[in-house]
Length: 250
Image (tube, rainbow, N blue to C red):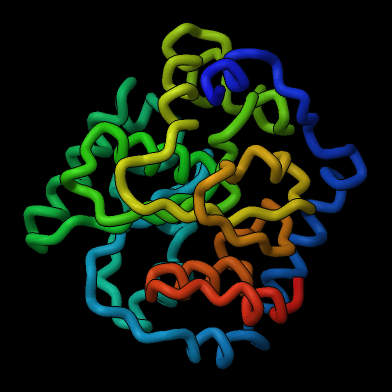
């Protein structure tokens, strides 16, 4: 059972030191080569104007999601950041993501439509939590390199998470939240993940029985990686094309 698997120490390990060391140069390469992919990225299916909220990763903010916002807006979606500053976990969202729920509810009320949540890393974990807590507000969830399906120790960032958020991964409340996150949300959810991620084990970034798209990307810069951006666009359009995503260079 999922609950039993998550509650026990994971058999998955954090990415190797070599893969961790490659994160910075791979992320830099993603940034340097992105302009060469932009024209192809703009060939993704056009959006339908739906409201889309972008939730940043650990210690990132709305500014970090600016390029993704520009891209999805250009495709025709109504895109907004989460509006809660830097993502420092419960310190930003409240212990049960209640402040984030308020942001989603306001966007929902403004547009009179359920909101699509796109979250990167920790942001994707929060998106799933909102979907569990208030499915009436959420149309679908897309997570990008978000380790929601396993033990946080299968990452190289769990100590940074504890330091920045003030939460301990073995706290009863945190474990209970992980159990909820591992369950399939009551709305459509797609996980975008990478087996070559150097910060989190890709195996805990997707769940059996849920739609997922594998890309080849580092964790650093994944929010601007061409494969991730195209996978998000294809998912929102309702037809993730794994073949075309896979042809984009890593």
